Length: 141
Image (cartoon, rainbow, N blue to C red; front, side, top):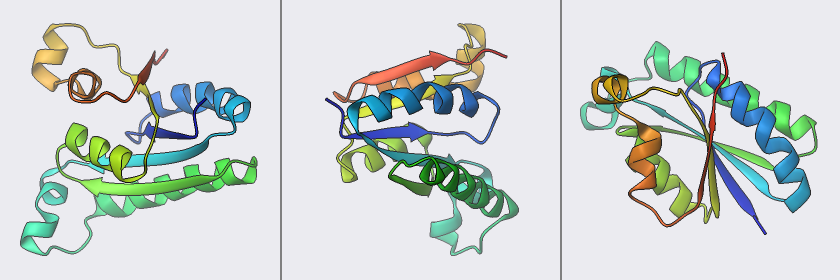
């Protein structure tokens, strides 16, 4: 069924919801996992254009991603991790296409209307820009 599942992470408690949920699905289907995080702070967005060194945000995100990947590998999963910079939905889709992912599985913050207008919704943006199925699990705080 699924061979490669992309799991976007945002380095927040919501990540644990999708990581917990996706493990049984990956085991059942034998899928490998592709973890992705898009650093989108000011320095991260312009890092390539301005040839900037890694910011603290980037260093922390890279460390977090690697810890998540290592944890999954120790549990027997085949897992890779990618750190990107820029506009989250665009970068997530780019990774999904390059890695030939056949499912995107992510936690949502559960914002509604006003917060989505103020903060935007990566999940909604993805849903309208790809034919890859997206599994969205609302994070329970």
